[in-house]
Image 1 (cartoon, rainbow, N blue to C red):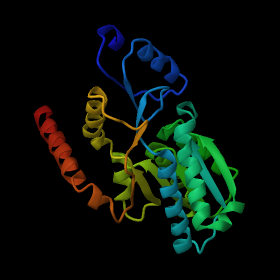
Image 2 (image 1 turned 45 degrees about the vertical axis):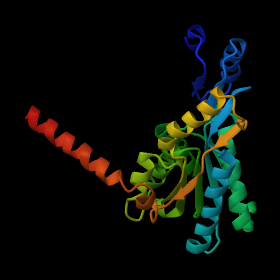
Image 3 (image 1 turned 30 degrees about the vertical axis):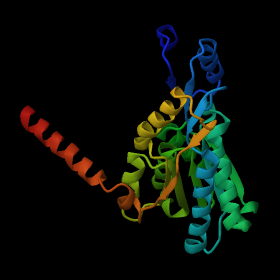
Length: 258
């Protein structure tokens, strides 16, 4: 549709790496510049996550957490994948491993388990639940490709009565992740923020630079921040207000239907 309409610029967000070359070719043939969000497309300007850096941030924090809480002892590292998104998002997990080993060199000898969770809570829960039936590791670090996968893993540990055996870290600092960070004594110890709420403004700036033929780097990365139970209210102080507004809306709807 965008090609048919002969737009001046296309902004594309789709997460299937195999489809990316096909989409990019259509815009390239039509001589339409393109910005690809979070998943690279050949010839397009990339805007989004610095996946390796985000993973590195997560891994370094997990390494410090283990030193403080488990006296540097780790038995296993579980990584929740999203294979269909391709190699770039998987760099979050690669960076996480490197980050852990930089802070905690002894972790290089512990067992690493890759599980497919498809980036969703349900499949991640089932994958970790199945794994826990045969794993008896006492100190387990869990890294998710995103928050839903990390939370699915956490729920599996909780169901098995083994929450104290894990420390879970997610990616995206999504609303459900931030809600878990506020839970007392949660084993969801952190999530790396990507601030998608800031994407719009920044993408508009990149778009105007392209349209005005100003120099634009091939990749424009967001600035990631680690969000923990101690800092979640600092970075997202309005979450409570949003929850109050949703609760008030629910109460009013219930009154009307009563």
